[in-house]
Amino acid sequence: MRILISGVCGFVGRTLAHSLAGRGHTVSGFDNFIRPGSETNRTELKKLGVKLFHGDLRAASDLETLPAADFVIDAAANPSVLAGVDGRTSSRQLVEHNLGGTVNLLEFCKQHRAGFILLSTSRVYAIAPLAALAVEVKDGAFRPQPRAKLPPGVSPAGIAEEYSTAAPVSLYGATKLASEALALEYGETFDLPVFINRCGVLAGAGQFGRADQGIFTYWLNAWLRKRPLNYLGFGGHGHQVRDCLHPRDLAPLLEKQFAAPKLAAADRIANFSGGGASAMSLCQLSDWCAAKFGPHPVGFDPTPRPFDLPWLVLDSAKAARRWDWRATTPTTAILDEIAAHAAAHPDWLELSAPL
Image 1 (cartoon, rainbow, N blue to C red):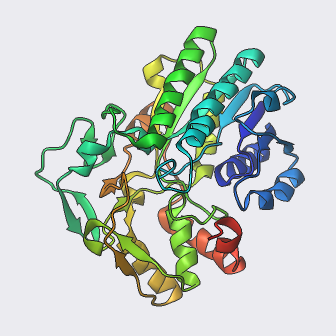
Image 2 (cartoon, helix red, strand yellow):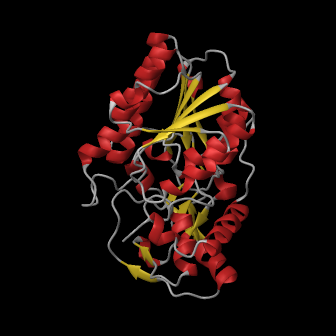
């Protein structure tokens, strides 16, 4: 199978390229290398036989000379929920990257009769009901109160696909949700296989160390280097919870999607995450770091971050039913992998997330 990956030198793109090339697929990809740290992945991918191209997803002309593919995996995006509102990034550029770029890839797929897989996000789900969830603290982490009335589509197992995607979902979430809708329309209009994979928090060794995009990697690297760390909002205890998924766990799923017959639109969208078994609060992550690296003080910044939520866990039951898929890398193994990488790369924060 000929696979083209956008954002191939980002953490997720590089991980998938590595996995798919190792499974015998012909992999090529392109990247604009604007993210600090992305250049570090070029040599490794070339050694694996991945053909690399320099290109900006926002420029349609940059895609004109790319090789034909059987499937395109869209792993290029500005992945921060704070993008466009943090005072450091442009809302227009966010839309150009995440939505305009998807349009360009879909046009490429139309031209080459290629399938399309969008790596989407848990951030397409409506914020307001999740922010208002009745939660309690258990073992240093928020969880829904056992007898609380939960919104439709939300259960103690997590957020399912039928949960609301009504605004507000953040500018970032809106660009991904709009990309999902366009991808499905292109698939129906031009008879292309299209899949929407809504992923939980992706993490692993080599992820770029930014608090707004790779919180597990950032926290471990900052703890090890004795950098200042703060719990933001929620009373300053670090009880907010996220799930965790290693992107290499997606490789077997992608191969099934490559070979799948055309599916109804509803079957093309599914959540993929480690679910409740992988979920961890910042407080629990700090406990893990303290046991691994020794103590380090964590402060409290009372300023809340926009769009932050106390508990964000995806329910992947549909993926298990439809694709016989489950995450196979436990959170502890992901953290051990990040820790080993952090120990071997003492300059990782400076390299991948310059201040």
